[in-house]
Image (cartoon, rainbow, N blue to C red; front, side, top):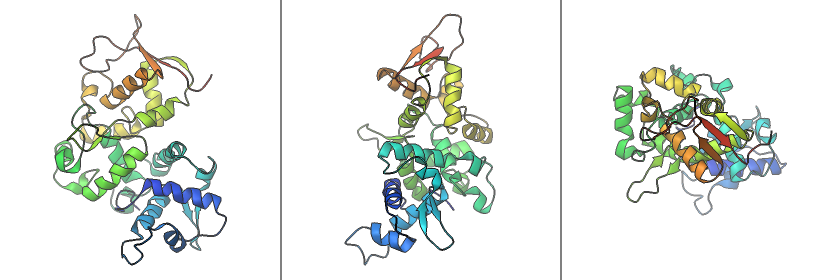
Length: 306
């Protein structure tokens, strides 16, 4: 079951459905949820229920909804253990954890034939790892402007079924998932529509769980990659690089921090959430090719107490 293939998946609707199921003690099947959540005033439209059906399908695939043999739909225990009446931020964190469940999905780049290539969130995880490997300082990514050519060039084939984002239907679905997971933002540049690989919210969520204090930048980046394996140094990104034989991000080529992560670090430093430091006689990394000094340490501020 694919996550990106259903064309009308709405992550925000998934939150509404899951909150409803947790709070409502009645038994609900798909037909009942469709009647409860499909838009009013379009009951005669043949596709009126597609948004609800596609959303239920995708959230089953990532393990947040469970369907009993009798057809009853409930929120999974792996969701309810985190609470109820989820706000946007809390739901994002739970949703991302379910998407990046490598114990369930294994290596998403070990692509074979049939269902194994799309089960769980494998298709979405492949797309996220490729998207986040692109230059965050270049033009925003959009289907009509650059994504098709970039994939053809990087994967060495015009056969789109070998690409992580095979067509505009999957891109449109991805364009809803990636911002909802905190791994992308819409472009704010006038006349440049698309998405920017800027995982500010997802990284902020991770460092909120890390203890305050100073750590070497290599240790910090490795800790991020363990929690967000679609980032540079993460196992999913490493599998992508092995397939391409080169990392697409220019920062990596220059012995610098990946451009997406580097931009987030600058943003969080400006917000006072962390500080980037250069200490003598310590190894470090440039934040970009134009940086004049290496960053050797990161000091987190205002997060989890030791």
